[in-house]
Length: 135
Ligand code: FEO
Image (spheres, rainbow, N blue to C red):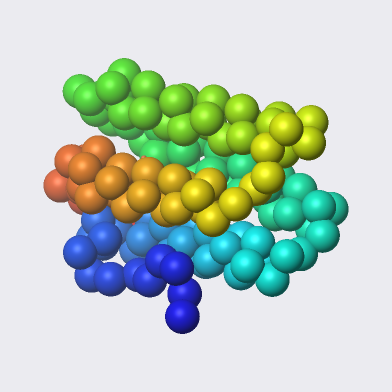
């Protein structure tokens, strides 16, 4: 069973963003599966890298529209994105230095953060983005 399943309560009612969130959820599940199966360090490094790149892409997508349309909560939202990026960078560094055994705890942290962020901060922009024509 997947660690993190998509459900309607995660929908921000914007197709492009829901699809990006679904992709992130799939990546987290893939990461979890690889850890569970004791995949190689190389494979896990690649997955961390891919998740970082895609997270950056997704955050940039949201931030671009927040700036473009003058979203009032932009600063607070960006702060959350930046904190997450910093945390994942720390985890990656520890992993690469061999100081940290990438465990299920890390995956659970990433999963919980994403769920809370989507249902909290992302949900707040939903109406505003829809009004500005984002689909
Ligand atoms: Fe969907 Fe603000 O991340």
